[in-house]
Amino acid sequence: MKTVIYWFSGTGNSFHVARAIQEGLDDVELISVAQALDGDIEPSQRTGLVFPVYAWGPPAIVARFIENLPSDTPDYLFTVVTYGGAPGSTMSITRRMLKRRGLVLNAGFSVKMVENYPPMGGAPEEKKQRKINDAAETEIAQIITLIREDASGNFAQKNLFFSLIGCLAYRFFRMALSRQSGSKFYADDKCSFCGICARVCPVQNVTLLDGKKPTWSNRCEQCFACFHWCPEKAVQYGRKTVDMIRYHHPETLLNDLMIRQE
Picture 1 (cartoon, one colour):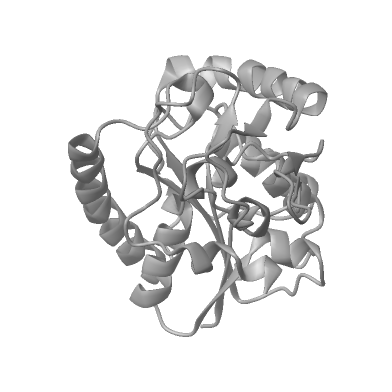
Picture 2 (cartoon, one colour; picture 1 turned 135 degrees about the vertical axis):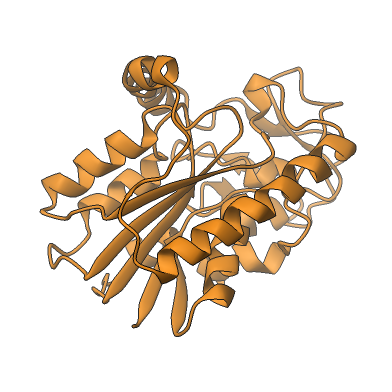
């Protein structure tokens, strides 16, 4: 059965999961959500969505992607979300979004991975990162087995409290994102003008002119790829991130996340 997995990732956590599923199944194509939004989205027999949890819901770019999905229901539709704290209401919100498109979510999965959102404190020390990522491999292997068997159901981690408040928090996050977007980003004096921040941005929100530091527009998705992948740690968000740990999944390469720009 042909499988197409649409993925969105800033630090490579979700991309790592998508690639692991690709390696665990037969005949799988990976397509970035940002790339798919620029062209036609083709239905497939088995379709997967892999993305991180943002404020207990799907990223705004993923929501836009779902709104553009063809209404032809695949034989099997699954979602895998990666999270640092809790999935919250992500699965129920995603299911409702798909339902509005006439699509049925057959299976939902979640994987706990390294938290890396700077406004909430960013990534932990490397030792803890390794422990979390090692545990994630076991979860990913289990998910691959269930997808191979076309298992149905909600297999995502559940927490009643976060599920109840998740919808409200997610709505607030989306409203705040529309108001602030990329206004808090800037590059400090460590900037080497390499342009990686601009090339890794999935929505081309970063502009780098010759001889000038990068600037951020108002289309930010809050993926913080520019922040975490900057080799000089020059990209900052507000005034408290200078000494913050930068993170990307150890098995994800910078080029893996630059498909849209190639």
